[in-house]
Length: 253
Ligand code: 5GP
Image 1 (tube, rainbow, N blue to C red):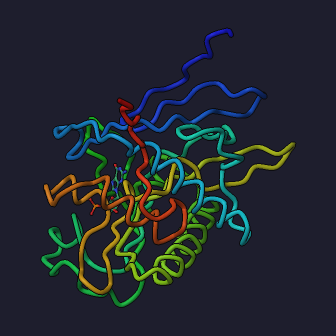
Image 2: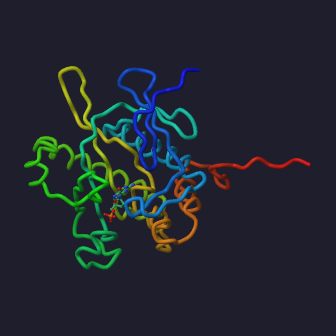
Image 3: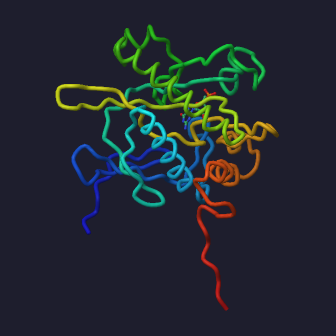
Protein backbone atom coordinates (compact mmCIF):
# COMPACT_ATOMS: atom_id res chain seq x y z
CA UNK A 1 0.00 0.00 0.00
CA UNK A 2 1.32 3.45 -0.87
CA UNK A 3 2.42 5.51 2.15
CA UNK A 4 -0.10 8.20 2.82
CA UNK A 5 0.93 11.82 2.88
CA UNK A 6 1.38 13.47 6.24
CA UNK A 7 -0.04 16.98 6.18
CA UNK A 8 0.66 18.16 9.70
CA UNK A 9 1.89 16.81 13.01
CA UNK A 10 0.56 18.55 16.11
CA UNK A 11 1.05 17.86 19.80
CA UNK A 12 -1.81 15.37 20.16
CA UNK A 13 -2.78 14.52 16.59
CA UNK A 14 -1.30 13.86 13.17
CA UNK A 15 -3.20 14.76 10.01
CA UNK A 16 -2.90 12.72 6.81
CA UNK A 17 -4.35 13.29 3.36
CA UNK A 18 -7.78 11.59 3.14
CA UNK A 19 -9.00 9.18 0.46
CA UNK A 20 -11.15 11.81 -1.32
CA UNK A 21 -10.31 15.44 -2.13
CA UNK A 22 -11.46 17.67 0.72
CA UNK A 23 -11.02 14.95 3.35
CA UNK A 24 -8.39 14.41 6.02
CA UNK A 25 -7.55 11.53 8.34
CA UNK A 26 -7.00 12.59 11.96
CA UNK A 27 -4.76 10.21 13.93
CA UNK A 28 -5.02 10.60 17.72
CA UNK A 29 -1.66 10.14 19.45
CA UNK A 30 -1.04 9.10 23.06
CA UNK A 31 1.16 12.16 23.61
CA UNK A 32 0.08 14.56 26.33
CA UNK A 33 1.51 18.05 26.64
CA UNK A 34 0.77 20.96 28.95
CA UNK A 35 2.03 24.46 29.65
CA UNK A 36 2.87 25.05 25.99
CA UNK A 37 4.62 21.66 25.73
CA UNK A 38 6.93 22.30 28.72
CA UNK A 39 5.42 19.19 30.34
CA UNK A 40 5.24 16.07 28.18
CA UNK A 41 4.31 12.41 28.58
CA UNK A 42 3.02 9.46 26.62
CA UNK A 43 -0.22 8.20 28.15
CA UNK A 44 -1.12 4.78 26.86
CA UNK A 45 -4.66 4.67 25.47
CA UNK A 46 -5.31 8.44 25.55
CA UNK A 47 -5.49 8.64 21.75
CA UNK A 48 -8.06 5.85 21.60
CA UNK A 49 -10.23 7.48 24.26
CA UNK A 50 -10.09 10.92 22.63
CA UNK A 51 -10.88 9.45 19.21
CA UNK A 52 -13.98 7.70 20.59
CA UNK A 53 -15.08 10.64 22.73
CA UNK A 54 -14.59 13.20 19.97
CA UNK A 55 -16.63 10.95 17.66
CA UNK A 56 -19.38 10.80 20.29
CA UNK A 57 -19.58 14.58 20.79
CA UNK A 58 -19.21 15.52 17.12
CA UNK A 59 -21.84 12.96 16.04
CA UNK A 60 -24.24 14.34 18.64
CA UNK A 61 -23.60 17.89 17.45
CA UNK A 62 -24.15 16.90 13.80
CA UNK A 63 -27.41 15.19 14.81
CA UNK A 64 -28.81 18.33 16.45
CA UNK A 65 -27.77 20.49 13.48
CA UNK A 66 -24.51 21.99 14.72
CA UNK A 67 -22.17 21.48 11.76
CA UNK A 68 -18.83 19.79 12.44
CA UNK A 69 -15.97 18.44 10.36
CA UNK A 70 -16.59 14.85 11.52
CA UNK A 71 -17.47 12.29 8.80
CA UNK A 72 -16.78 8.90 10.37
CA UNK A 73 -14.47 7.01 12.66
CA UNK A 74 -12.14 4.71 10.73
CA UNK A 75 -10.57 2.67 13.52
CA UNK A 76 -9.48 2.94 17.16
CA UNK A 77 -7.18 5.88 16.54
CA UNK A 78 -8.31 7.50 13.32
CA UNK A 79 -11.27 9.41 12.02
CA UNK A 80 -12.18 10.83 8.63
CA UNK A 81 -12.97 14.55 8.71
CA UNK A 82 -13.64 17.35 6.23
CA UNK A 83 -10.63 19.44 5.33
CA UNK A 84 -11.15 22.99 6.61
CA UNK A 85 -9.30 26.29 6.71
CA UNK A 86 -8.72 26.69 10.41
CA UNK A 87 -9.59 30.12 11.86
CA UNK A 88 -6.46 31.01 13.87
CA UNK A 89 -8.37 31.35 17.15
CA UNK A 90 -9.01 29.12 20.14
CA UNK A 91 -12.60 29.70 21.18
CA UNK A 92 -13.08 29.12 24.91
CA UNK A 93 -16.45 28.94 26.65
CA UNK A 94 -16.57 29.08 30.43
CA UNK A 95 -19.47 28.25 32.75
CA UNK A 96 -17.46 28.24 35.99
CA UNK A 97 -14.22 30.07 36.79
CA UNK A 98 -11.12 27.89 36.46
CA UNK A 99 -7.64 27.83 34.96
CA UNK A 100 -6.30 31.03 33.45
CA UNK A 101 -9.50 32.99 34.02
CA UNK A 102 -9.62 32.18 37.74
CA UNK A 103 -5.97 33.22 38.01
CA UNK A 104 -6.24 36.35 35.86
CA UNK A 105 -9.31 37.74 37.61
CA UNK A 106 -8.67 36.36 41.11
CA UNK A 107 -11.90 34.32 41.17
CA UNK A 108 -11.98 31.10 43.16
CA UNK A 109 -11.97 28.01 40.93
CA UNK A 110 -15.43 26.49 40.66
CA UNK A 111 -17.33 29.77 41.10
CA UNK A 112 -20.36 29.74 38.80
CA UNK A 113 -20.25 32.58 36.27
CA UNK A 114 -23.31 34.83 35.82
CA UNK A 115 -23.59 33.50 32.25
CA UNK A 116 -21.39 31.57 29.85
CA UNK A 117 -18.39 33.71 28.96
CA UNK A 118 -16.70 33.31 25.58
CA UNK A 119 -13.02 34.18 25.19
CA UNK A 120 -10.71 34.12 22.17
CA UNK A 121 -7.02 33.24 22.13
CA UNK A 122 -4.72 33.58 19.14
CA UNK A 123 -3.49 30.15 18.04
CA UNK A 124 0.23 30.75 18.29
CA UNK A 125 2.38 28.36 20.31
CA UNK A 126 5.40 30.67 20.18
CA UNK A 127 3.37 33.38 21.92
CA UNK A 128 1.64 30.91 24.28
CA UNK A 129 -1.83 31.39 22.68
CA UNK A 130 -2.47 34.91 24.08
CA UNK A 131 -5.97 36.13 24.95
CA UNK A 132 -7.20 38.58 22.28
CA UNK A 133 -10.24 40.82 21.98
CA UNK A 134 -12.71 41.14 19.11
CA UNK A 135 -10.97 44.45 18.32
CA UNK A 136 -7.70 42.59 17.67
CA UNK A 137 -9.51 39.95 15.63
CA UNK A 138 -11.20 42.57 13.42
CA UNK A 139 -8.17 44.86 13.12
CA UNK A 140 -5.75 42.08 12.18
CA UNK A 141 -8.32 40.36 9.92
CA UNK A 142 -8.20 36.97 11.66
CA UNK A 143 -11.99 36.72 11.18
CA UNK A 144 -14.72 39.01 9.84
CA UNK A 145 -17.61 40.42 11.87
CA UNK A 146 -19.94 37.89 10.20
CA UNK A 147 -17.51 35.10 11.13
CA UNK A 148 -17.47 36.32 14.74
CA UNK A 149 -21.29 36.28 14.92
CA UNK A 150 -21.27 32.71 13.56
CA UNK A 151 -18.43 31.62 15.88
CA UNK A 152 -20.25 32.97 18.95
CA UNK A 153 -23.45 31.20 17.96
CA UNK A 154 -21.61 27.90 17.30
CA UNK A 155 -19.70 28.15 20.59
CA UNK A 156 -22.86 28.71 22.65
CA UNK A 157 -24.70 25.87 20.90
CA UNK A 158 -21.78 23.53 21.57
CA UNK A 159 -21.83 24.69 25.20
CA UNK A 160 -25.55 23.95 25.61
CA UNK A 161 -25.14 20.51 24.05
CA UNK A 162 -22.00 19.56 25.97
CA UNK A 163 -23.28 20.90 29.31
CA UNK A 164 -26.52 18.92 28.89
CA UNK A 165 -24.81 15.68 27.87
CA UNK A 166 -22.37 15.95 30.75
CA UNK A 167 -25.01 16.87 33.31
CA UNK A 168 -26.89 13.73 32.25
CA UNK A 169 -23.97 11.58 33.44
CA UNK A 170 -23.25 13.52 36.64
CA UNK A 171 -20.46 15.71 35.28
CA UNK A 172 -20.21 19.51 35.39
CA UNK A 173 -18.87 21.20 32.25
CA UNK A 174 -16.58 23.86 33.68
CA UNK A 175 -15.15 25.15 30.39
CA UNK A 176 -13.88 23.98 27.01
CA UNK A 177 -11.96 25.04 23.94
CA UNK A 178 -13.04 24.51 20.35
CA UNK A 179 -11.55 25.36 17.00
CA UNK A 180 -13.54 26.53 14.03
CA UNK A 181 -12.90 25.83 10.36
CA UNK A 182 -14.11 27.35 7.12
CA UNK A 183 -15.45 25.12 4.35
CA UNK A 184 -16.53 25.99 0.85
CA UNK A 185 -19.68 24.45 -0.64
CA UNK A 186 -19.74 25.72 -4.24
CA UNK A 187 -20.01 29.50 -4.06
CA UNK A 188 -20.91 29.43 -0.37
CA UNK A 189 -18.63 29.30 2.61
CA UNK A 190 -19.58 28.46 6.15
CA UNK A 191 -18.00 27.83 9.51
CA UNK A 192 -18.07 24.45 11.23
CA UNK A 193 -16.67 22.95 14.44
CA UNK A 194 -13.28 21.33 13.72
CA UNK A 195 -10.28 19.77 15.51
CA UNK A 196 -11.54 17.67 18.47
CA UNK A 197 -13.78 17.80 21.50
CA UNK A 198 -12.41 15.60 24.26
CA UNK A 199 -11.30 15.72 27.91
CA UNK A 200 -8.02 17.16 26.55
CA UNK A 201 -9.85 20.36 25.66
CA UNK A 202 -12.58 20.52 28.35
CA UNK A 203 -12.70 20.82 32.12
CA UNK A 204 -15.02 18.17 33.53
CA UNK A 205 -15.74 17.81 37.24
CA UNK A 206 -17.71 14.97 38.81
CA UNK A 207 -20.78 16.64 40.35
CA UNK A 208 -20.94 14.38 43.41
CA UNK A 209 -17.27 14.40 44.44
CA UNK A 210 -15.72 17.34 42.57
CA UNK A 211 -13.13 14.90 41.13
CA UNK A 212 -11.44 16.24 38.01
CA UNK A 213 -11.96 14.06 34.92
CA UNK A 214 -9.97 16.06 32.35
CA UNK A 215 -6.46 17.08 31.34
CA UNK A 216 -5.95 18.98 34.62
CA UNK A 217 -5.28 15.48 36.09
CA UNK A 218 -2.10 15.50 33.98
CA UNK A 219 -1.36 19.22 34.28
CA UNK A 220 -1.61 19.12 38.09
CA UNK A 221 -0.40 15.53 38.76
CA UNK A 222 -3.73 14.39 40.23
CA UNK A 223 -3.50 10.69 39.32
CA UNK A 224 -4.14 8.55 36.27
CA UNK A 225 -5.31 10.45 33.18
CA UNK A 226 -6.38 7.21 31.49
CA UNK A 227 -8.61 6.36 34.48
CA UNK A 228 -10.19 9.82 34.38
CA UNK A 229 -10.91 9.71 30.62
CA UNK A 230 -12.11 6.09 30.87
CA UNK A 231 -14.56 7.19 33.58
CA UNK A 232 -16.01 9.84 31.22
CA UNK A 233 -16.17 7.34 28.33
CA UNK A 234 -17.81 4.66 30.50
CA UNK A 235 -20.45 7.01 31.88
CA UNK A 236 -21.34 8.12 28.34
CA UNK A 237 -21.51 4.50 27.16
CA UNK A 238 -18.67 5.10 24.71
CA UNK A 239 -16.59 2.36 26.38
CA UNK A 240 -18.16 -0.70 27.96
CA UNK A 241 -17.80 -0.89 31.76
CA UNK A 242 -14.60 -2.61 32.91
CA UNK A 243 -12.84 -2.28 29.54
CA UNK A 244 -9.44 -0.72 29.03
CA UNK A 245 -8.72 1.48 26.02
CA UNK A 246 -5.64 -0.58 25.19
CA UNK A 247 -6.35 -4.12 26.35
CA UNK A 248 -2.97 -5.76 26.81
CA UNK A 249 -2.39 -9.19 25.29
CA UNK A 250 -2.81 -11.97 27.87
CA UNK A 251 0.06 -14.40 28.34
CA UNK A 252 -0.97 -18.00 27.85
CA UNK A 253 1.09 -20.68 29.60
P1 5GP B 1 -7.43 27.88 30.33
O1 5GP B 1 -7.46 29.16 29.55
O2 5GP B 1 -8.12 28.01 31.66
O3 5GP B 1 -6.07 27.28 30.41
O4 5GP B 1 -8.28 26.83 29.45
C1 5GP B 1 -9.67 26.96 29.27
C2 5GP B 1 -10.20 25.68 28.62
O5 5GP B 1 -9.71 25.59 27.28
C3 5GP B 1 -9.77 24.40 29.32
O6 5GP B 1 -10.82 23.45 29.21
C4 5GP B 1 -8.56 23.93 28.50
O7 5GP B 1 -8.45 22.52 28.53
C5 5GP B 1 -8.91 24.43 27.12
N1 5GP B 1 -7.70 24.87 26.39
C6 5GP B 1 -7.12 26.07 26.38
N2 5GP B 1 -6.03 26.11 25.59
C7 5GP B 1 -5.91 24.87 25.09
C8 5GP B 1 -4.97 24.25 24.20
O8 5GP B 1 -4.02 24.87 23.69
N3 5GP B 1 -5.16 22.93 23.94
C9 5GP B 1 -6.20 22.23 24.48
N4 5GP B 1 -6.31 20.91 24.18
N5 5GP B 1 -7.11 22.79 25.29
C10 5GP B 1 -6.97 24.08 25.61
